[in-house]
Amino acid sequence: MSRNRYNDYYLVNDEDVEESIEVSLKQTRNMCKKAIIIVLIGVTALSLIAIILAFVVFPLIFMFSVSLQEKLVFTHSDLPSSRAYYEYFRFPGLKNHYVQVKDLNSDTNLSLGLWHILPFNLAVDASNNSNFDYDEALLNSNYSVLLYFHGTGEDRSQSSRKYQLFRNFFHVITFDYRGYGDSTPGDLFERNVVSDSLQVFNWLRNRTNSNIYVWGHSLGTSLASNMLSQLKNSSEIQGLILEAPFTSFADELYQHRYVKFFSWLPWFKATIIKPLERNGFIFNTSAYIEQINCSMMFLHAIDDDVVPYYMSKKLYDIAKERDKGNEVVLHLYDAKLKLKHNFIYQDPYTVFFIYDFMNRTSSEEMYLIEGSHQS
Image (cartoon, rainbow, N blue to C red):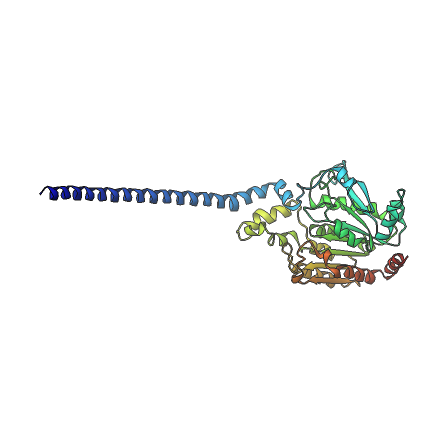
C-alpha cells in the first residue's frame, strides 16, 4: 500500500510539472509571436520611412537644391588639388600651365590648370634639353594639336595612359574645369564651364599654327560639342572626336546607374529632369552637333555600362544628316573586348582609327607626321 501511495504521489506531481511546462511554453510562444510582430511592424515602418525619404523627400529636396544638382553633374570632391602634384607629375615631355579666364557672371578671373604634353619625338628632345622651348614647339610644329575634355569625376592627371596614345599624333592640351584639380573653384554650370572652355580654346588658337582637333570623353563630349557650336566658324576645327558620348543629359539620367532607380516615379521628370534643365544643366549634345560644321568621329564600346552605345549611333545619324561634305565616322567596339566606358584607348585598333580619321581630314598633315616620325 505504501508503495502505491508513493507512486501515486509522484504521478500527480509529474502531471503538475508537465502542465506547468506546457503553460510556460505557451507563454514563451506568445512572447515570441509578439516580439516577431513588433519587429515586423518596426521593419515595415522603417522601410516605409526609407521609401518615403528616398522616393518622395529626396526628389523634393533635389528639386530645390542647386547644390545637389551641381554635385550630381560635376563630381570632383575626391580629386587631387595640390599645385605641386600637377607641377611635378611624373610624365616625360610635360609642361604645366595656368590659363586665366574671366568668370561669365562676374569680373573676377579664374585660374585653370592646364598641361601641354609633347609628341613623342619632341618629348625625347625635351628630355635631353633642359632649355627646350615648349611654346616655340607648339607654335611651329609639323604635329597637329589636340584639345582634350575629360569626363566628370576625373582630372587632367587621370588620363595619362591615354595621352601616351595621343602623343603619337598630337601636341596634347588638357585642362581642368573650374573647381577640378588645382583650378580655381567657381559656380559649376554648363554655361560657365563652356565659357571657360572657349577662352582656353582662344588661348590655344593664338599659340599655334597647326591644325586643331578636339576630343571629349563622357561629359566632356557634351562640353566640347557645346563649345564648338558657339564658335563663329567651327570649320576651323580639323575634327571632333567623341568618346562614349550621350545624346542629352536627360536621356543619360534614365540610364544612370544611381538615378535610374527613380525613373519609374510619376514625378521623376518634374523633380529631377525639369529642375536640372531650368538651372542650365542641359547638355543637349544632339542639338549642339546639328550646329557644328566639321568632321567627326564617334567611338563607343558596346558593353559601356555608363552611357549606352546606341547614343553614339543616334549622334552619328544626326551628324550624317547635316550633309555638309564633312567626314563622319562611327566605330563600335565589340562587347567581348570588355572596354566598357573608360578603356577604349587600350584597344590596338584605336591608334589606327585615329590615324585613318586624320588621314581623311588632313592628308597633308598626316604626311608631315609621317615625315617627322621617320626623321
